[in-house]
Length: 66
Image 1 (cartoon, rainbow, N blue to C red):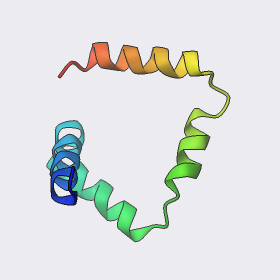
Image 2 (tube, helix red, strand yellow):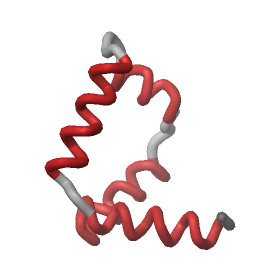
Image 3 (cartoon, rainbow, N blue to C red):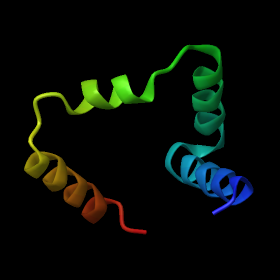
């Protein structure tokens, strides 16, 4: 997947999930503030087992079918 396709798919996902205004706000926030994705992900899943993460992901997919 090239960068153009990646950006297109990412924007579509953001807009579907957050709406156009929310997607723009999200991107602006990422650009404006220093953001460490790895640290954010560690903090987000801290203390959770892989089974809990998997269960939560499955529940999300059921509630948000594509």
